[in-house]
Amino acid sequence: MKKLLLLLIILYPAVGYSQAQTPDKGIIVTGSADSYVNPDEASFNISVATSDSVMKEAKRKNDAKVEKILSAIKAEGINDRDIKTNYSFFNETYDYNAKTENRKKTYQSSLQLTFVLKDLSKYDEVAYKLIEAGVNSTSTQFNYSKTLQLKQQLRIEALKDARIQALAIANACKIHLGRILQVVDEASYTNFFNNNMQFKELSSDIQATNNGTKGQIDITAAIRVSYDIRP
Image (tube, rainbow, N blue to C red):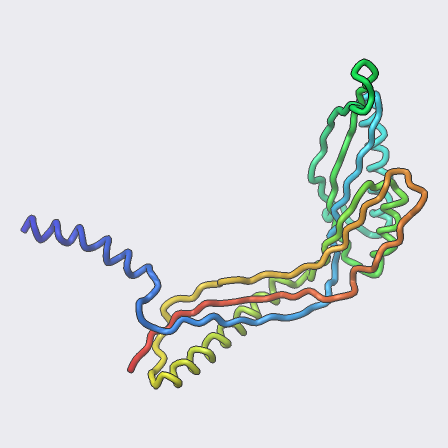
C-alpha cells in the first residue's frame, strides 16, 4: 500500500506537467490579421532646459519657460489631464575646455513633459508655438485612439484565419480537425511612426515642421492555435 501511494505521488506531478506542454500530435497554426488606420492623435514628448551660474536662477528661468510652454499648449485646447511631467532634475557642469584654474561651474535645470494633442489639425501650430516658447527638443508619436477596440476585432479575424489554415492542412493530409487544445496571443502590436525635432535654445532660425499626419499606422494581431486531429 505504501509503495502504491509513493508511486501515485511521483506520477501525479509528471502527468500535470505533461498536460501543460504543447501537444505531441495535432496541427499548430498561426492566424494573423492587420489593419491600416489614419492616426487621430499625437503624443508630444518635450524637454526644457536652462543653464545659469547660479543654481536658483537656473531653476527660476526654467520654471518661467515651462509656464510659457504650458500656457501656449493650453491655449490650443490641451487639457490638464492630458499633460504629464516625466521627470525634473538638476546637474552641474564645468567648462573642461578651459584650464583647471579657470573652469567655471554651471547649473542646469531640466524638465520633461508629455502631452496628448487630440486635434491633429492643430499639429503645425502647436509645433511652432513650442519652438517659440523655448522648447529644447521634442519627439512626437502618432497614435490611433481606438487601438484597443481594433485589436480585439483583429484577434477574432486572426482566429478565423488560423482555422482556415488548419482546415486546409487537415484536408491535404486526409485527416479531421478536432477540438482546440491551446490558444496563444502571439503578437498583437502597433507600428507607430514618429516625428523627431531638435531645436537650438534661443535660436532665431525657427525650423519648419513636417505634418506627421501623412501616412498610416499598421495594427496587427497574431494568434497561435493548436488543434487536435482525428483519423
